[in-house]
Length: 87
Image (cartoon, rainbow, N blue to C red; front, top):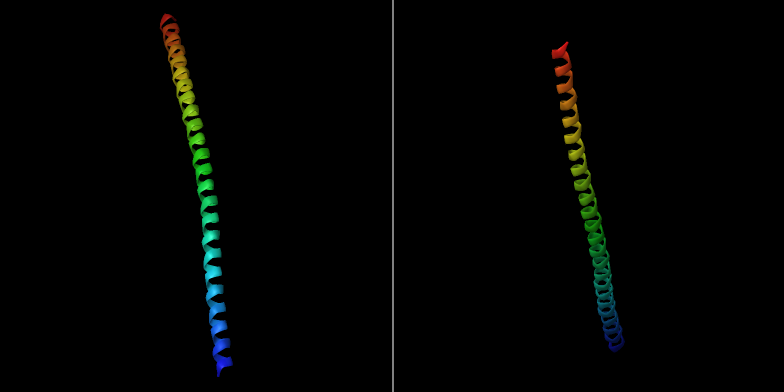
């Protein structure tokens, strides 16, 4: 009977130690993953901000170019109207 109790006690102790080891390993892995996720999130946000800045810059350049093109077209149209009125 003593041997059975001893074996049961050792098995229970081993199970507790194994459970604790698994819990600790998962906690460490979770922290490691979380650090990687945070790093990837920061990197992605940085790239997204950079892309947004470039898009805003290109949009403003395009808007300026459009305004210049419209003004040039208006000037040409006015010249044609004046030339037509003379003829």
